[in-house]
Amino acid sequence: MNIEKQLIAQCIQGDRKAQLRLYDQCYSYMMSICIRYCKDKHEAGSRLNMSFLKVLQHLGQFDHTGSFKAWVSKITLRSIIDEFRSQQKHYQQHVYYGQLSQEMDWPSEEVNHLAEETDLDHLLAVINRLSPMDKQVFNLFAIDGYGHKEIANMLNISEGTSKWHVHEARKKIKEALMKESKTTSLK
Image (cartoon, rainbow, N blue to C red; front, side):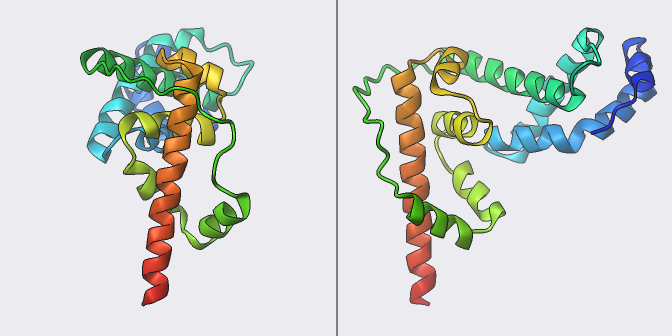
């Protein structure tokens, strides 16, 4: 994503045509982030629009020393997480997960084999079927590279709960891929 300084300056000044050009240039990248965290394209589009509004509101804070793409990514993720937090307050769940062993019962050879035989779109569809919290924590951990402590702080959960959600997501993904693998091998 190569964004010109002049385009950013025009957007800051309120030039609607420049803002539309910026939206068009950022759309694909921002949508790829939103779709990972949302249950469908409609919700992803809504989150993208809220995120882009925040990008426009804070565009004056972008200092051009770092990557514009990374800056947009951070705002998009924060916007999605903020929305998730506000929804969490309405659907507060009180569940005790206990201690989670650091060992995941998912041998790497098995994961690699299943992943190699699964195309990316199919794998994303499997991830998309996870519960909203499992999906969000898994995406933050496995795809975006955040640690459990960071995830816990972002989502206002404990580190143990973050680990539990990653464990559950991996287990569900593994089960789905193995089930589908067995189904296709029987044909």
